[in-house]
Length: 333
Image (tube, rainbow, N blue to C red):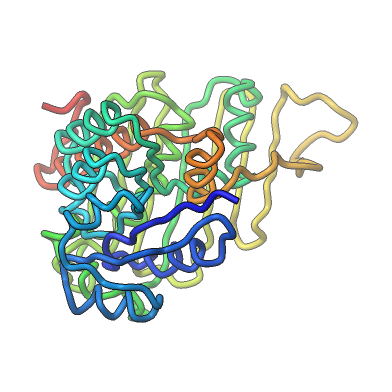
């Protein structure tokens, strides 16, 4: 059996322990070493995993026994760490977002493409059956021309106190609720509606943190469809929801019952009105599974470095809009 030897680069992100647990449990992967820019944090993480800590990143990147790296550094370190990893020929799995600015994202993408390494960013919502169904509905035109998409993805991490304090560090994160949790709505919107044209965003600092804790972005796409992306660190018991509205019908996903319902004049049958599909598309492998399979067996990756650049570009536009209190048009300067 082939074994993928990985290095955990950073324990900063809240999902780092989850990725480590998945890698340790996977029969084809192993964690060989941990690095972190914060030595104390890195040593604690390494001790918990039962692997060595290495304080010199170059030592890991020049180690031929390391096949790939899992990047969970502060977001403002992504360009440095991901670029260095690609140049060293290491396959890369990274937490979203790719970078803080569109310019940095394009720089990373250029190096990753030239290096030829396998790259996967964590877009888990694009692997879920209900969202895959939404993509099928759009691609098949089952709602006619799409006019509006609304996505709400929120939790109460700030209110309940389980988000780490460094998630409120503007320099490290590049922002708050929107750049972190709102990223899921951003990449889903681009996936469903295509190329963005302009964006307008409004953020709030209700709990007085350095970064926003409540945020909304409105995006118009080249096809004239609009998307409303809502997110928050303050919303307890707030179920994920995705709503699609077109000239021939509507699709509602999520809510308290986690249901999927469609109502379209193009779906003629014995029962009119709201219908729950009898089956949904099969879930794709998780982002981490896609990364592992792509390296060991050349299996497909369903979201690319270009998708990662689009996400960062949308985020960059949203933060520019909030800062200037103006709409921002793509492409960015």
